[in-house]
Length: 95
Length: 93
Image (cartoon, rainbow over all chains, first blue to last red; front, side, top):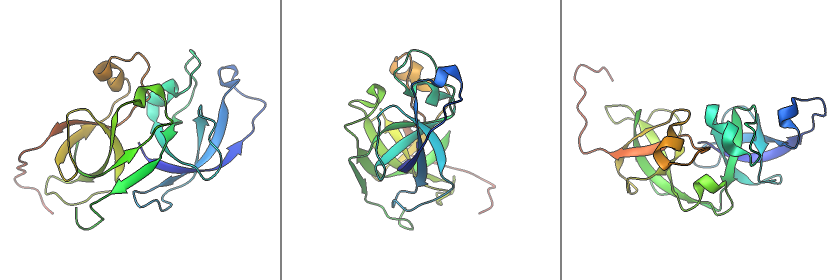
């Protein structure tokens, strides 16, 4: 589960019916020192996060379960939760 | 599954129910020769690993649901074991 920063939202009125009440957020994946790494992706957001929040992402098949509706939302990336604090003791190179 | 080293931990109070009261660790994947490969990632620990431990971690769709007994668990990587020793003959660096 990668760390990421919420950087925007996506509005799509024409979409899959299973996606009806699902908020789509644009997230930028981060490495463990919270620097950008990789391309931004779109993730479903059940926790209604706002821009700038640090979150962690669930990917692949398990992301379907990340929304509170009973139906499985067709997605491969979802926000799992909000990060309150990250504590990395062994820096890169000392691992 | 991958070999990794636990390098830190993470707190998250506002999260999906499946993460409630779970131990979230930051793990750096390593090669069998214990060199860093790729980016550190977050994994859920349920075997009691501490920072600095060598661990075995892995993820598969639906695996977390079986391990934690939750019908719909949006969880990927999990720390499944703590490594005592690794031997890997014939591996080039």
